[in-house]
Length: 156
Image (cartoon, rainbow, N blue to C red; front, side, top):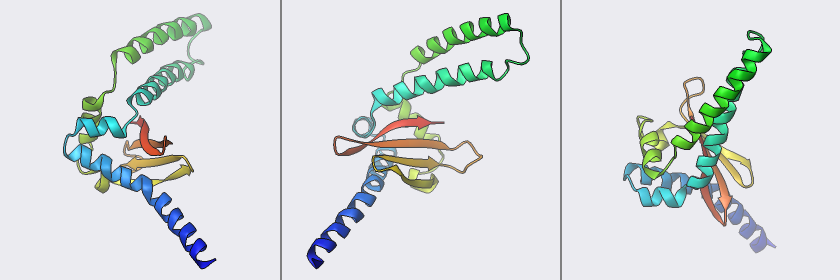
């Protein structure tokens, strides 16, 4: 029974440390400007999808928050124009490994130094905050995919 409990304890410790190891790998890839490693650690398709959804939400939210100030016709026209512009902007901006490296280099320090929060949101989701709250931190979401932690969202 002692052997089984020790084995279970060891498995829990390894599971809890696993995403931190992947954060370290991401840190090393950024320091070394290793685009190939970034492509392995980041699900670029999912990051682009989340980026586009976030951009569309921000554009729609900007119009809806001003709904009291504008008449209905003007608000509907603005929503149509902003919807078109957000689609164009979402299609124009594609996050690739080089773009992601540039964004992470803007942190002014290593990922380890700037990490102010890193912990599980759920058994398959891990959140990392780079920078202090209230000072425009970058939030990184990692998801367990096929027995490997991968970055699936980056929020500026």
